[in-house]
Every structure is written in C-alpha cells, then in structure tokens.
Length: 111
Length: 114
Image 1: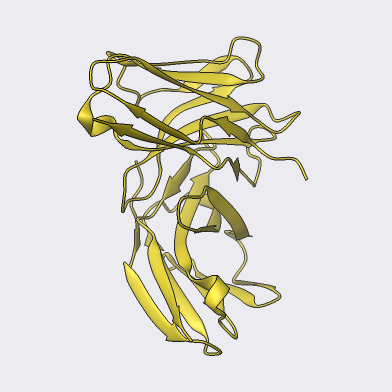
Image 2: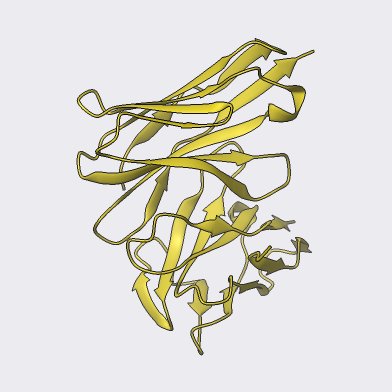
C-alpha cells in the first residue's frame, strides 16, 4: 500500500490553533482527506481536497496541500475541547478508489 | 441523515470460534469496504466490493476470513477460526461508486478474542 505518515500526538490550549501534518508518497493521489475519530467510534469525514488545489477552507478548518513536497496539513482555528480526538489523513488515487490511511494524530485540547 | 449501519457494536469471542459482522451501507452506495483497525493504528483495507463483486481482497487473510455481498447491498464479514491477533475494530464504509470522493464509515464492531 501507499505510505501516509503523521505525527502521533499534539496538545494545544483551548482557543489556540491546531496544525496537524501529514506526508504521503503516492504522486498519483487524487484526493486527500481528513477524518476524525472519537473514542470507540467510527471515522467522520471532516474535509477533503482535490490534488490540483492548494487550499480549502471550511469554517474553522483549513487544509493546505503542498503537492511538490507531498505534504498535507489541517489547521483547526479556535480549538475547542470537543475537538479532542484522533485525526487521520487519507489519500486515494484514480485507480481502485481505495483509501490509504495514516496512523493518526491524537489531538488533546487542554482547557 | 443516512448512515452506515454495523452490528454488533461489540463482540467477545473465544479463540477458535467463528464470528460474523454485518454491515448495511447507505442506500444507493455501490462501493462497500471492510477495514480493520488495530488499536493505535490507522484502518487497513480488508476487502472492497463494487456492487456484489469483489474488487480488492488482496489483504484479506483468506484462510480464515471471508466476506460476501450477495445482493450488492448489505455485507457480512466472517472469521473462522478467530485468533487472538484478530482483536481489533472492524469498520465498514460505503461510497457512491468508483472515483467517488467521499467514503462514509459506520461505528464499527469492536472484536475481542480471548
């Protein structure tokens, strides 16, 4: 499968911005996704970006894509305690439509 | 709001026993995925269906795992016999079809093999 890597842990204070980073290896990646997983639950799609885009903003979420460096980031503005969860980066390509996930970044928001 | 339904939510089984999980995708979604998520890791694909056909089962341990989607709607994943290493969260997801941008996940089945 494809390699999708993320840092394991991130702690931020409530009200600060969080930035979660991800790198991937497949240059043919078509879509890149961010999913959120709360304890014991399934994955919730937060947002996705098409590979010909540099940035996408959706309310408090901003996705930045550096296709040259194969680097994806998710910025959460005004982070709240309810944002505490594991965030997974994922990518898919035109072939097979399979999703490859990173190992997840555990975000802890400190009140 | 339409959801991917999975049952059971939790399952405890003894090793060497058989266990089965069920998934009902969002209505109209042609593509169905079964993923396994070991604690502390990201999900890994076990099998992908397009309608009733298997598209990718290269990561499915076929000596003990089987999956079917007979009518192209709901799906069953079976493990027989279960091993201790099978303890994990089993996630089902669905999407509209090929090259669809979004996959929607169910709540998962947490399997513990003792």
